[in-house]
Length: 348
Image (tube, rainbow, N blue to C red; front, side):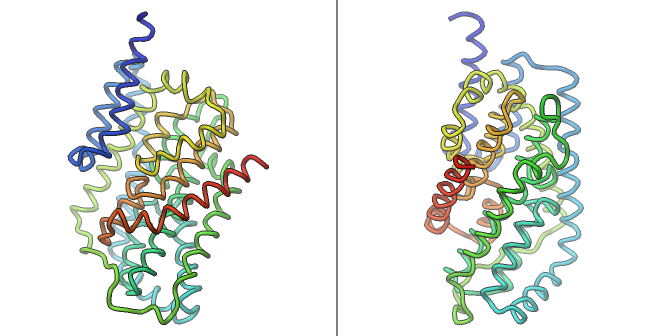
């Protein structure tokens, strides 16, 4: 084996560990931020990409989303009572079906500003206030998480995936700015949010009210807010290192794959965090068309299972949703969305 292949072999092993250990080892899943940070440092070392610029980027890039999560987290805690009042007022004015669709639409469209994390926390409060039948609430949560995951990708504030994509593409030839993903994907994402908002209301009526329902586990403490912001900071830092370190591997493999193949390959983000995959796959040499296939594949399939994205993980933990019942509600919708988007991407 020539010396040029040794770094690629090491990066392949690191990539395999990143993909499979969080899904198979509980301790790694619980300490995901620290695990990814270690893997990122190893990847940068193996690829020989250490530089002062990279270290500076890893320290600066996570600040915006971490500060947004911190500030909005405190505002949200103060406004919990307002959330309950707003939900009650909305259901009185619109009726249950339209109110549920409006909730999903609002959370999806606002998640790029208030962040996917805060949108998921608001969702848990909304579901607690509604107290509907569990089957109805489960559909609402799944649809809302699809909408939040899609909408949060429109700005770097929304979630780590969009933060990393913009950071990796901010130089030539894409020169990505704050609204880069909104321009590239807005035409595709906004109708998707409207579609899942409509779907969320189909099985819910006034008669669906019942005692067996989902509910949030406990109110937020100051310590919870601070720890969450710190974890988001470390998570994005880890993704910066992973994205840079795994760059040579992505350039040799992912960048050469056909657009349609990359779209379906990224359905693995149903079981793996889509931000991690974006950090490993996105390279500046990709065309805008390939980036569109890649990111949309990650966003849609990321909603199918709990580990796929941040809103799923937070909502399932807060509302005590089991993996199997999530899959029963989310996988059929995800497969329909994946197929519809794929056909439209090919045709348009």
